Image: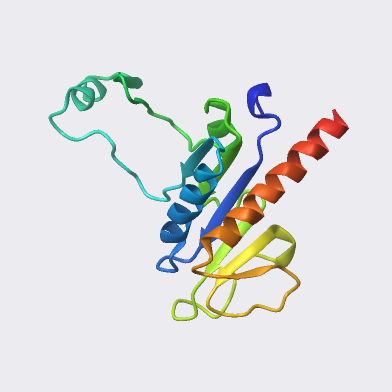
Length: 176
């Protein structure tokens, strides 16, 4: 991993589709931001996605053969890069600016610690093994040795993220 993100903790939010992962993640992001942290979020899409829309200038440039198209304004910068093979999560992280915490949505197969969102009407089984999990957010009380929060307790889940981030940095600094 690039030096700028060497001390940046990465936590993946994972769930089966329809479990409320994005809704919880939005609330967790707001809660963490309200406490003054700088965040990056990386969303995994298992399917092709299109940020460029037909007819837009960046789309036209990409269609003309550009391998990388960037668009910049006073408020945002976006870079769209064509890849032959999907980049690993660490490769994506290496492209990010320095932040305090990186959250991901998806990446259930990554080696990053995870918070699993589970809803009883979607599944009665977890995706992850207990040793992969920092916490579970669910409407079920899981008794597997992992902290379990209500699916509506965004503040509790945000506090898990923040506490993990502190421990991660302390361990990295102590081991450096």
